[in-house]
Length: 562
Ligand SMILES: [Zn+2]
Image: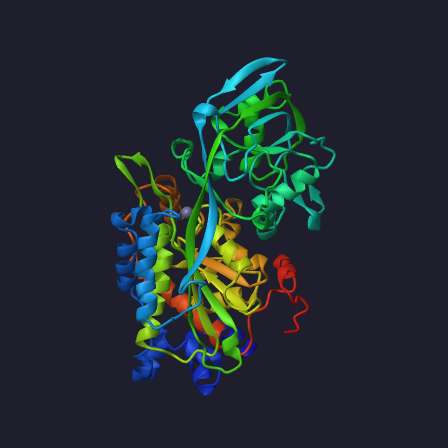
């Protein structure tokens, strides 16, 4: 396998066609058989291969992101309606149900909603009260199980990051016992992206802070890396958040206070400390190391939270493989079907349709499923299609599924996750999250390059995209995984388009069907996903973590002896 791959990368594509044809048993020959060059060369033989042009994809998006799906909030009638539609498609394609109830895997959540009129935040200066305005200065995060009352000193802990592998510890020498840590999200640039992302996950970060004695966290948003302007974050602060039911899932036990601070109002935290907010924001913007120091005011928090139990479901369907042995291995394609539901109106629109986030990814799965129905190939391994719930609530559906899989534990050998891949510009560059971590990265590169698309690692590691979607839960269970999105070159006009999209449409009602979409880019993206999927399902070897990948440690057989 290696040699043709290398040749393919280096030598002109046409030469590869000759090599591939000379080795018909090579798994690449099937994977590549839909390339335009191959179509010309192979003619009718490839006519029954699926061709994606984005048209059928967009038809699915139109259904899933329509107003009558009401934004597909976890546990809502709108999401159930979208799920019913998906189940219909799974049945039509003849996929086997592998949920706990038919295609459904039920998941239970605790929904939490802050009751602001019974809650308050204040800074205390030597007994003097400086009330904070909820929504304007700061907001509570109900992702954690807030304590009703917290009175605690504050310590500025920089990025609040502990990376044992690199001997990096922002908490070293800091007295955090019974105190609240004030931090910026992010990491200094010398910490590699994947590692920085991992240790910034809520669970890992809290593990280190709790060990140091902290009782809570105040996060000041980094103005240079805010996807959503503060006004929009604040507008939806009363929207319920959710947590998985069950102590096994509580990664932030003991976190009594979680507050997100408006960077424009955060100077008041630093009065008298000898440091200014601006000085720190300048460092954070350039991803430079941050100082650590105690703060003068203490925090007084009173939190009242409405809690209730919510049920929702993941959908799980299987296309069995053809090889008597390899069919026991699953290549998992996942996408979250849930979104934010109905929220605060923006320009008179209350429905957060989530067309890109993530009707677009669910539609790729449906389109792949339909193409498999039309031209059922004989893939050796089985395919598992998982439409997860609760992604927007903190990757909860995928967390539940990977913790309690409905297929044999250890049988999932790869995960390709599709979330908000943003076909809003032509697909010339593909961003691959997890590019350097496993063989899947190499295979994604091959698939993309076979269509003339270049690949790049995450150009904005400070956004933590690698841990911000469902692939992360597969990674944590040892499954090599990746996610991909339409990318841009730094400094290009496209970069501006993406930036504007994030500011205006990301998690806003205008991520709807009335936005410019590049269906050709979506079709090409689907084609790459299809080739990667075929390669993973049909190749002789399952993908492996790279020997130097940090995430290899989660693999049950990290020795490589399968
Ligand atoms: Zn989202």
